[in-house]
Image (cartoon, rainbow, N blue to C red):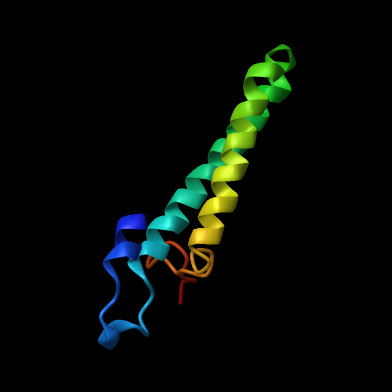
Amino acid sequence: AVTGQLKGVPEIIEDFPKDSDGSAKVALIGIDRSLAAWGILLKYFPSQEDEILPILVHLERLRKNTEKAFPGAGAFVRPGFDEKPD
């Protein structure tokens, strides 16, 4: 996502969705799934809270920074995944 953002976009295709936003959206989905999984682990292993909480904090920070760097990621439509069937 970062590489695609740094390369810049030729003026002729500025109206198209950015590839970097698509990559960032996939990363955000992975972060969300990781947060959910670690939350479940915390539920079942409360004695490991000291080890799990820093991971959850890191993932939340990563999510926040990714959303800040790629504000269009959430609205990016992934063909075949985010489209509603006809």
